Amino acid sequence: MATSSNVEAERKFDADASTPLPALHKIDGIGKVGDPTSHSLEAIYFDTRHLALAARGITLRRRTGGLDAGWHLKLPLGPGKRTEIHAPLGNAETVPVDIMDRVLAYTRGHAVAAIATLTTDRTTYALYGSNGERVADFVDDHVSAHVVVGEPRELRWREWEVELAAQDGAADMDLHPLDIMTEQLAAAGAKPSERTSKLATALGESWPEAKGAGQEKPGGKSAAVVPVLDYLATQVADLLLQDAHVRLGRDDSVHQMRSIIRRIRSVLHTYRNLFTKDSSGSVETGLKSLAKTLGRYRDTEVLHHRLRNDLEELPGKLVLGPLHDHLDQRMAIRADTAMAAVKNRLNSPRYFRLLDELESFIDAPPLAPKGKKRATKTTAKLVNKAAKRLGERHEAAVGAVVGPQRDTAFHEVRKSAKKLRFAAEAAVGVHGKRAERLADAAHKVQSILGEHQDSVMARAELLKLGSAPDVGNSAFTYGLLHAMERYAADATEQEYLQNGAKARKLRLRK
Image 1 (cartoon, rainbow, N blue to C red):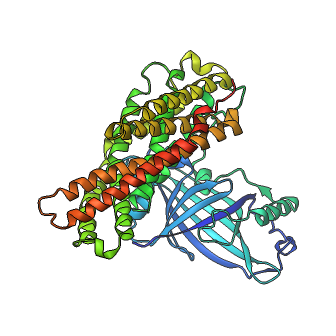
Image 2: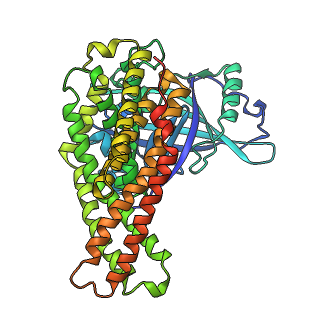
Image 3: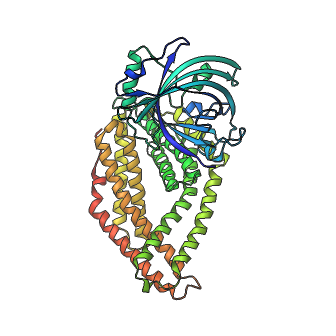
């Protein structure tokens, strides 16, 4: 079932039943007001019985009537903006799969059902700019609501909305025209509304507290745990969004999801002394297992791309046998198997419990005394400890014997660089640009040695391919590719030795 999306930006106003319409033609930048169009709309809103979607500012409804009948999913995008996804009407009792896939990380296996039905008598006025372009719509709504969640009830109200003209995928749309219209309508007597949505108005006191509401923002005088929790909350929010991208098969989504998991796990480990002993152990274990499941697919993706590129670099006369087809078939089978495991994992109760644990840890952190100490000194000490560990791993790597032992040692350097990077990122709210510079330097090391590790994995695969019983003349080509990858690994080692010192030397001030 096809879906589409756009970004919406709107402002709401309260209006009594007898309030006259404002003089829309007097708004700066409006050259013409279109003739009114009227529609009767009915929207059935869906959520879990715990209102898991509402708690995150997510709206799921099926609307009939008007020009955009169908299923609508609205996801928060930023201040004053939401992404709205549309799907055809379909079955009134069944949420479309493409829509449901986007909210499973929030509903976590709990059923969604109708919680309210809203009927709206809507009159819309198109607002045009001086050049005749449609700038926005002014909407006058008379709403009747029937609520079935909590104590069943009926209520009525009137509200106005000003919404910018739709812009597909315009996450960076300019809100300035909307701000001007809002100011002028308020000056003309319109009352800016505190309502976040029609559903929030309908649910009233049943509306849940927003997830993460009241969370303290980091600063130099805050407790050490504050920047860590703020960073973790941001990463978990990104994880929940990326979950939908993986389910929908978006390019690079598995990689992005695994990267987020690594950030969370790494920060939990680096800052573990801020929390009571072993309190994050089960979460870290669950994250490690999830990252491993995602990693099987991602590693196949990277390996396939790398070996394909290596083959393309060879002159055709040196490619003996149908290596391209053989490689594609081998990697396709491996990728399909790995993706099936990913999807099974993302639909498992085990995964949903992990998400619950993560959010519970952030909402009610099990603090140790160190977590309550001043952030500046405490976070600097822990980040600097991670930098020291990177230096130790570096010394071990440069002193290792050339071969598998040295490859493994450089991989340990890379892992330490990642931990340092994420630890420094979590401390940016306290240490500012110095933490950013340290994170950037660690990221550079991570990227260089990431190429080195990719070469290690490629060489291991090429040895398997070249030693297969039926390989024939293709063994020659696999040998050439192995030599190319050995050369690439040596080059990344040299690049690291020339550019990796900054991450080992930078420190945060206590």
